[in-house]
Amino acid sequence: MQDELSTFSRGGIVTDDRKTLTSGKPIERFVPKEVVIPLIQHLGNPCRATVARKAKVTRGDRIGNAIGGVPIHASVSGVVKRVALQPHPTLVEAEAVVIETASELQEPVWEEVSNWEELSKEKMLEQIADAGIVGLGGATFPTHRKLNLPEGIKVDTLILNGAECEPYLTSDHRLLLEQAKDVVWGAVLIAKIVGAQRILIGIEENKIDAAEILNKAIAKINPSQKVFVVICKTRYPQGSEKQLVEALTYRAVPSGKLPMHVGVLVQNVATAVACYSAIRYRKPLLDRMITVTGRGIMEPKNLIVPIGTLVQDIVDFCGGLHPRTVKVISGGPMMGKALGRLDCPVIKGTGGLIFLTVEEVRREHYGPCISCGRCLDACPLGLEPNQISIYTEAGRQLETESFGTKECFECGCCAFVCPAMRPLVQFIQVAKQSFMTREVMHV
Image (cartoon, rainbow, N blue to C red; front, side):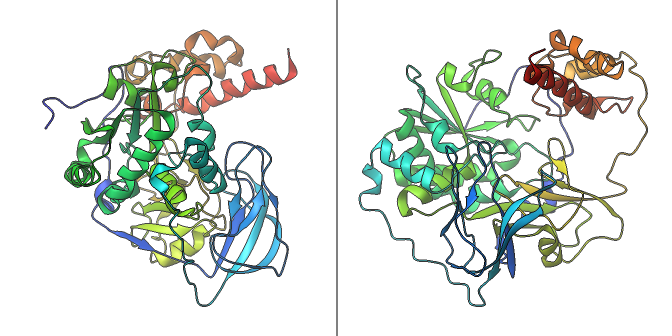
């Protein structure tokens, strides 16, 4: 056991994590009667449909290809009803393939790849790309591209991110408890691809029950790499890449650089499991494990659902909404996005659905900055959110670069602690957009 819990050195907050709503609930599978699979779900070029109306598809069939991106697959077996513009959780609308689920849903047989443990780096990357795997921690960057390190970059440490520091969310925790062996195998295979000889699995102390299970899985697999489970303080944003790298390796990632520039690669635990399935069985990314929670949903659950499952169908499966529900968030409450409608689907980047009642939503009107400095203390990057907000409010957002606008990853710590209830993250987003507009116009 560690003598001291690991954590990052600057800023951060401790929240009421509200994970007990679902942390003790095993993962349940739900399959809807229809899925709506958007052809844009990740960073990079959108896919083009490779199927048309009335086509019969089997779960795992490729239904969308993208030049330079990753493909999209049918998450259920059934018949294509249409390919058309449909509501999207992060865009207004996007082209999607709508599939009516077959009445008798049977899982295809995923045949084990011969000598899967001994595949070359190139072959493993090919299978990860063909499986359509993207980062499942929120970024949705194509995983095969992240693992294909640039020339001259060497990585000695792989970090598996199991911190799940956002309040409410517990699906990664349940994954660690229920599929620990798959998590460890995924880590071992990814480490082989990038050449890392050390694997650190970072989890917060509120998931300490997963440590023993992970250690048993490590002992059973007995990999050639050194693998350690590291317990971190329960502190937001512990799961942010740069903060987790510092907490586990004591290496600081410089401004404008990535963890790989200090010899570290970070992957989410769910991404590791997806890579393991792709390498061992050539199984595409078809499902998303999510937490459905908040006091606004009658029966909070941890679910695994086919990609393309509509939020409304999930609501119905979880007993419906509480009468006082006023807000739905896709993702976590700190960095997630509010949904304006329930007829949009779960996509690869959906980590959870949070249903909040009027009592849980902060609705106070915000006031002027009172120069208390709390946002400065809370910022894990040491930026100046107060100044960014003041300048942006005055229409001077292009003067905020020296305060750290471009460095901000919008964790929300500043807004959480602000006694004036100022929407600091939104001010920062406005400032960022101004810089992006200027760069596009070359002004």
